Image 1 (tube, rainbow, N blue to C red):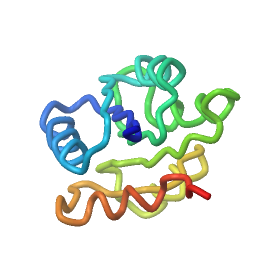
Image 2: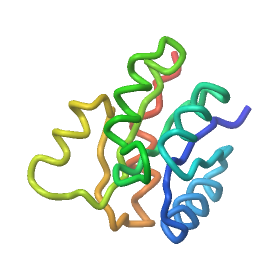
Image 3: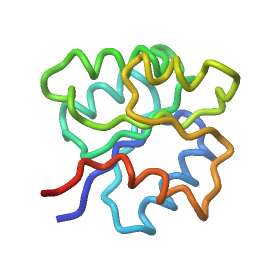
Length: 124
């Protein structure tokens, strides 16, 4: 069974690029365009991993991560912030909000899945 990745991203070009790369590596993809939809999708599909943009319309990515960490259904799902917020302190802010990891944009398409795959829960 394919592992499921939820991509929460509002920018059309970024969403296209992330979806293309992730699908190419054989993962099942679900997408959400804003924080509210992202939370709803995460609760519904229970993905194996979430790729989360921080700058989203409505509810920002920090709030999405905090909400997902409060819910027993999503508390253990790895969340990787994939964001253009790459100033000093932004990584720590994402981790403090509940993200498991942080990948700054622009992403390197040749290295992206290696970066993402390190956050999947290890199979025993």
